Amino acid sequence: MSSPNHRLEPYAVEARCFGSMSGALRVGHDGLVTFANEWAHVFFGSACVGKRMEDLWNESEKAGHVSSGTVGSLTAALSAKRPQHLFDTRDGRAIMLSTDWLPDDAMLLTLTDVTFVVRTTVSQQRDVLTGLANRLALLGKLADIAHMSTSAALLYVDLDRFKVVNDTLGHPVGDALLKLVAERILRLLGPHDLLARVGGDEFVILQIKGEQPQAAEALARKAIEIVGRTYLVHGHSVQVGASVGIALVAADGNSPDELIKSADLALFKAKSSGRGTFRFFTDAMDREIQARRALEIDLRRALAMKEFSLVYQPQFEIEGKLLVGFEALIRWSTPDRGSVSPAIFIPLAEEIGLIDALGEWVLRTACKDAAGWTAPLSISVNLSPLQFKNPKLVETILSALAASGLAPSLLDLEITEGALIDNTDVVVTMLRQLKELGVKVSIDDFGTGYSSLSYLQKFPFDKIKIDQSFIRSMESSHDSAAIVRAVTALGRSLGMTTIAEGVETDAQLQQIAVEGCRQVQGYLTGRPLSGADAAALVERQS
Ligand code: C2E
Ligand code: MG
Ligand code: MG
Image (cartoon, rainbow, N blue to C red; front, top):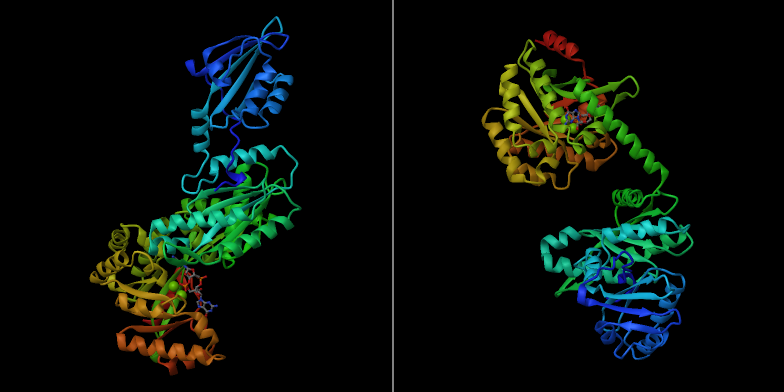
């Protein structure tokens, strides 16, 4: 690949003196060379002393020893009294010319071969696989343009489905694919633009020229289109997609780091809105991030101060309207925020690594409360899939049971299909250990995952919780009713209890009963209650 993007200008290189690798010339005020060492003679290919310096350079350029244009830029550097100037020779060496002005207006010129230094500097700024600029080079270039009032744009390009290709067809195919992607994107770029690879399947385009934001949008569209075309790699026909996040220089953050972060955030938005698309960074995204950070701070504090509470939603056997247990649901409210939904703060706690501590608090509190009830009713506790990443989970559950004195058979763990997606074997092993101890396991939000049925085979769940979305649409949709019917039939034949979530009306209750559902949980039969109210309800019922 020989695009101009690859030509990193090694301005940063320091001239180093490598002893015998230096040429020295003394040039009198009349421009005539009065002294030249052996190296200089070899460099110019002729005797130097007595000649005009200018002629030596011109001959050298004419003979093709130095690249054309060198003399012009050297003359400019010297007349501007710049002390150092870097140029290259036709045979690929990098030469640093250093000039000292002596008191008698003579000049001392030192020529140093800095090829080695230049090469290593350049290679530190190159991505080895594709030969593109790397993050370091990108940061350097961004710092350069930060001083100019340009309308540049930063396009963060991330491949969709690359991991699948890499995992299924192997790394050599993945590597070859990345090179082809780089080549395709390069075809779209102008001579001033820069393409860098900044991560496994992440590229950044620095678009220097063009009317923004139109130019960036056009480039993003083209990149998505061209990257998405089929590749032929090592005999395999391969397809990947691209998502693009765009930040405009000057408008969207000043420091190179900020710019990259903004583009990365926009990329995240592009990905979460379905991939194969692009998004511009907006102030709203920034505000969202700030709000998230504030929420994160509050959440950490709340955990330290134990500002959470649990409410308990009753679960009934439909036949006989018998209270069988409760589901523990976490609550959090602050004076400023009011009550924050667990649907918001649980995912955040998962993301910032607080879910283990939070989950443990829920377990211990729920077990303790349930152990205090006057009748042996079951208590359902939600477990986040991430809690299974902690090898101590089983130990923690045992400890909560032991500390509260609750019978293991009264504890019912609600897990979603998400818990079984990764490391299925590890999770199933943990679940089996718990089951051997007598703990019950339910599958929550059933039917909302990708391949719900296959998960029923992986572990003998005690209970299937049919997701609220099916219950809600049951009356209007024959499909939902059919799904509820099929799930209850399946549960029956597998020996699993079925419970309908989110039942709000009499009609829904009647219909789930007809479809064969055994239990119910919803606003109709009972809203979540405080710990005291739940205990009172147990007492009344028993
Ligand atoms: P989930 O486990 O499916 O819990 C049921 C949710 O449905 C609860 O919302 C409950 O209040 C709500 N609900 C119950 N009956 C009805 C009804 O008739 N109509 C409607 N519209 N909603 C009903 P909540 O408490 O906001 O919890 C939302 C989700 O947050 C839970 O879904 C669960 O995934 C998660 N969550 C709650 N507490 C915990 C917890 O302690 N640990 C973990 N890991 N997740 C929790
Ligand atoms: Mg649940
Ligand atoms: Mg649920």
